[in-house]
Each structure stands twice: as C-alpha cells, then as structure tokens.
Length: 453
Image 1 (cartoon, rainbow, N blue to C red):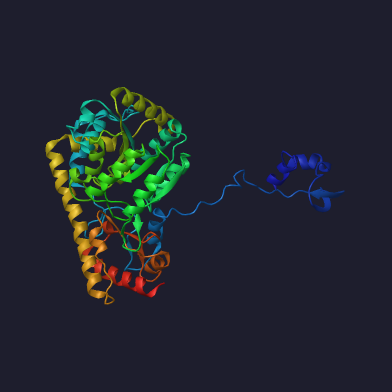
Image 2: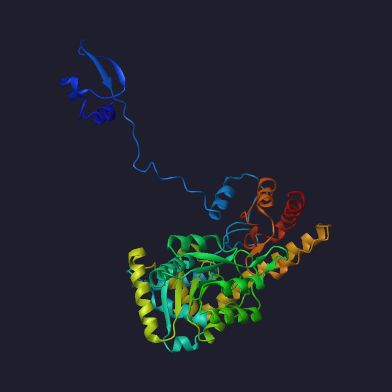
C-alpha cells in the first residue's frame, strides 16, 4: 500500500486520511470510505515496480564455462567434464604443482607485504617471463627492445593489447584462425577491433588447411594483425610444422602484417619450454616487430591467480619505451595495477634454478600423462571402430585438446546420452580424461559419429 501511495504522490497513509481527494489518478474506480464516511467515487492507482534495467536482456551462457555448470548439475556417475581446459590427475582431481607449493612457502617465510604493484607489474616477474619466452640471451632483450607489462593472465593480456591496437592502429584489422579459442572474438569485439577469419582447420583431413591459411593471410589488407597460436592450437591441437611456420613468416613480412602470438601453453604442449616457444623466437630472429600474450594458467596451474603478460617486441629501445608507456596508460583505468601473488610465484619458480628444474620435470610429467591418454584413446577407437575410419589425427594433434570432428548434433549426443560434457564444436580436453575412462569415451565417440547425422 505504501508503494501505491508513493506512486500517487502520497507520502504516508496519514496523507490519505487528511486529504482523500488527492487520490485522483489511476485505473481502478470505487467508493472511498474513511472513518465510515464516504468521499465519493475515486480512481485508485496500482503501483508497478518497473526496473530501470528492464531493457537489459539475459546473456547466453558462456559456451565453455557453461559446460562446467551443466556438468555439476548432472547426477550420473559416469559423467565426464571434457569442456574446460584445466589439468586433472589420473583420479580426475585438480592438481596444485609441488613447485608452486614450495614457492608459496618461501613467500610466507619472507613475510612479504601486500602493497600495490606498479602499473606494469612486478619487475622480477616481467624479467623472467620475457626471458622464458624469448630466451635469456635473446638480442631483443639485450638491446632493450621488448616492452613487457604484467597482465590478468592470457585474457587480460590479449584485451590490453586489443585496446592498444584500437587506439594506435584504428584502421587495422585482426585476422583470427577458423576456428579459434572462443574468447578471442569477444576480446576484439569489446575492444572495437574489426576482425575476419583465415582458414585453419580442414574437416576433410581433420588437419591443417595450410594452403587456405596462406591464401587468406595474403588476401588480408596490408598491416593487419595476424593472431597466431604459438603452440597447441586451441581448439584443434593442430600446429604448423617448422617449415610451415617459416612460410607463414614469409607471407606476413611480405604483407607488412604484424604477428600477434597467443602463448597459453608454453612447456605444457610438448613438455619442452624451448620447443613450445620456437615459433615466436623464429619470428623475433627475423627482426620482426610483434606482440605476444602469455599465460601461466596451464603450465604452472595458476588458473585462479590470473597471471600473464603482454610483450611487444619493437625495432628500437625508444619505440619499446613509448609502447610500454601507452600500455600502462591503457591499463590504469582498466584495473589500475595487477595482482601480486601469482607474479611472485612465477618469479620465484623461474628465477630459482632448483625450482625451475623441478618445474620442468613436473611439466614433463603433466604433458606425458596427456600424451598417454591421447595414445590410449586412439588405441581404443581403432580397436572398437570396425568401419575402417582413420583415427590417427588424434595422435597428430598436440596439447591438452583434441578436435574430434564431431558436429553439434553429435556433440549433443555425447552429452545427452553419454553424459560427456564438451564444447559444441567437437573439442574435448584430454587433460580432464583418465586412462580408465578412455574406453568409455571411445564408445561414446563411435556411437555419436556413426549413429548421429
């Protein structure tokens, strides 16, 4: 009643008693009685609480993170979550690296404070992350030609770089592989950077459409930003060969494009930090200016710490200084300055020879487990599928993902019938699979591939 009175301009029920004739608006008509006396016919207003946010529509579920929500709601004992790219043990449990625990113990013993970091982040982190990416003896580092700013993992680093592109290259277009990680398009859309796709995945071979890729990069406007996956392409797991990388670099140089690498799996794809960074280092060795976004979510398991970096390799120290100053300028109103905990973990692990070697051993174990699962899945598919289909593409892919070639309807069957949760483009995360579940997964894939159109 109080809200209805306020909608009529009445401040309280007392106002109604003092001046009943004020009830002069509304749609409901009836007799008004106060203390037994009739005041005649009046219109009564009905208050409707309309939100100022009525025009805000419901956003669709995130295509990747939404998979986990659906998985949690499923009560079937056979369910598998192969959607989100997060490493699991053979028991399918989250894994905190031992080297991370040791680094955090050292941090506690030092009793370090929680003061704000500079806008560009922790200096010790920025030093080791650049050296890890390019090699400590890289000439670009020695000459001071690399602008590095700590970012909010890979996503935040990509977003900061996209804002930089939009501000200083407003006419440029980004080129994105088809398919790509689901968030790439969101990042460029929100930064108002126009983008188009270059061919990458060939469904006929379940491999790389290299000719199509080269043709599309050649056809793009000169000076485009070409987004490349440094290793373990997401979602396909299909990487160019070293020779193909050289050809890609040739075309990018010919077209005066700017390479933009997303490196989310260094050391986690092959088990070797150097091998997984070889594509980036080759481009830098050619003297090319480029951008590289890094993430430590996968290779150090620091998913929740949001630790990464954006690196811009420039042609001169002066250019690097100016680029870094503008990256900081963009970061300031976005998030002011980055978090410190994950940065200290990385700095401690990479900066300490003993911990660094332990980390490499753990990465090799994690990468090795995924390779074993990949092999076992291939073996089960080959043994169980009597159709003669060639499943060897699974072994040719690399990293934590496998692109199964299943379409949306077949992926839906995987979930609805088999309780296997995955993205609708047919990608599965082998990091969330155990050796004991490979046979069950193979049964589901064979059924979905052959029995669902």
